[in-house]
Each structure stands twice: as structure tokens, then as C-alpha cells.
Length: 417
Image (cartoon, rainbow, N blue to C red; front, side, top):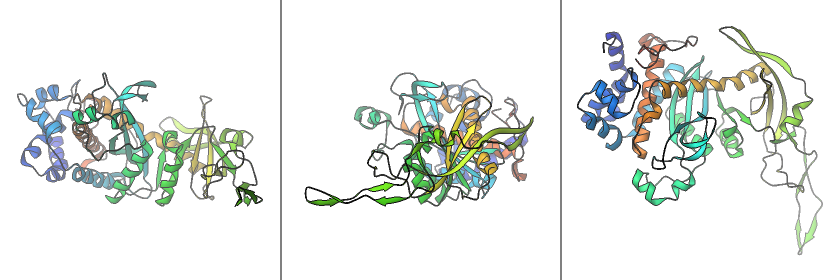
């Protein structure tokens, strides 16, 4: 298939630092073929059909490159973070934490389990990958995809060995994986002003505390039933009493905790325009009040967790569909409601890279079952998507992000051809 020669030149320039990070001569040879296989048109982006399109007769070499060869993956990830930061990083950038699921059949693909699959909207057999996306001006670049390993996989020595899961891999929750990846991309130079995540992460007190401990600003989703205290709550020591001859005291909150949806039920809701879309202003109703979350660890006499140390925003969002969502943010008390609303809505920018990597770059098409093969394929997909965003922003002449446009799947500049 004829390919725009200007695109080829840009492609070769883009991959140079990644090839340098690969080091090995054979890996440097086959990486561009694999990336072109992902980028160019084709219904299936698994090894055999890609080899037929970009390297006829060399299926085994492509398979060895992605599934068998040992890479210094961290070196390539560092290059990816550097490029993403150059394109969309900065104090006005947003780091979005999310996960994406890859539906699978059988139980042999590494990490596969019956768990929630967002793509299908229900529990299904799938792999779950924790993702980090850096975004500015509605232009996202996904920088990380890490496989979540269910406890059943961690405990299964036979499947671990068969899939080549490294011995050092232990069970970690998705929020724990996300915090580790945040530490990595920060160490590699990623710059952003805020972190955003849905309730799958925001419901974790450990995750919220971890972000605050790192000095990060965050806005995260929570469940409607999350208990919170009014910001003016105070703690007083309970009267001392003796149990078995030893004195004991328990702090007593001056106010009782209430569920998030109840606290905001009678609060004033305002119509807020958080940004202008292609068809006009984007509007919803929001309410916000300062609270302390009932995540302080120790429980009061009624069994409710005590107030946490940090005062935060509780934000309610009423969508035009009638659905109401709730969020927490450690943004300063002086933050305007419009800014809080824009941070709540900005998280959806991560849906673009997930969808495009699946539909056009074959993220879910990898048919191997190994730990290294899956992560190698995922990393190649991240590199390919970052190239498309680089081209979208003008290639070598890229500057500030331009408004989002619907990608043309027939053009290598925007999607996969």
C-alpha cells in the first residue's frame, strides 16, 4: 500500500530515540515493522496478519520480537514520558488515572479473570490494565498501561510460570498500581497540575491520601453513599473509663457523618458552563461544599470512621440525563465552582486514547498469553498512539494543542493508516 512519504520521514524521526533505547540490533530492526503494523490499515492487528502486511514471510521474527525477546522496557517508557511531556505536559496539564479492559476467551491469557469489563458494561472474562494519560487542551497521550493481577492469579503458581509472570510481582490493588505508576512518570519528568480519577480509584482512602502525601492536587469520583463530615466538625476526647483496670479514651466527633448525596440534597445547585464545545456551551448543574471525609481510620462509638485530617471539596454533578455523580477534590477552599466543574468533566478525555488504541491500533488484538508479550504489545500501542498525537499537533512544528477533531481512520496522520 502506498504511504505518504512525508509520514514515513516523520515516523523514522519519531522512532529514533525508542530504537536507541532498545539497543539490540535485531530489536531495532523489527520494532519499526511492528509499529507500522499497528499504524497502517488492517482489520486485525495480531502478529500473523500484521506480518503479512508489513513483513511477508517474517512472522516468526515479529513474534520473537514482541513475545520472546527481553527488553529494557523502562528505557522505552522513559522516552515515551519525555515525548508526552514535551507535547502536552505543563502546569495546566491533567494526569488522568483510569483502567481499560480487554475481553478474552478462556483462562490462559495472563491476568484474565471474571471481573468488570467497561467495554461490555458488565462482569465478563477480561484483562484489566491500569492507565495513566497526560492531557492538555483536550489532547491526551496515554503514558502507562499496567496489568492488574487478581489474587487468584498471584496464588496460582502453575499459571504464573506458564505465562512468565516475574517472581517479584505480588498482589496490588488498582489504586496501588496507579500510585506506583504516578511515582514512575513523575521521576521520568512528567509535569501536570492536577490528577483526576473515577470512583474506582477515588473511593480508596489509601489512594487519596497517597496523592496528598505526594503534594498533588486531585479531583476524584466517589460513591453517593460515601460518608462525610461537615467541615466545621471538631473532635473531643471521650470521658475516661476503666476496662480491666486500664484507662481508655475514644475521640468523639461534634457532628455525625452523613452520606454524600444526603449532605448535598438541600444544598444550592448552580448551572455551570465548564467549557465551550463544537455545538455551543457545555452546561450541567453543580453543587460544592467543604467537608472532611469519614476516612480517619479509627471508628467512633457508632462504628463510623472518624474525620480525616484534610478538608476537601464535596462536589455534586447533575447531568442532563438525570444522573447525579459525586466527587471529592483537595483543591483550595478559594477554588471557583466553574474550575471544580471543569476538573470533574476533564477526566473523560482519557476515553479517546482507550477507544482509539483498541479500535484502530489493535490494543486488544494481541493473541499471546505471556506477561512480557502483553506488556510489550501494550507499550508498542502507546508509542504508536503518541505518534498520532504528535502528528495531530503538527509533527515537528507542534505547539499548543488544537481543538479535537474526529480522527480519519484512513489517514496515518490521525488513526491507523
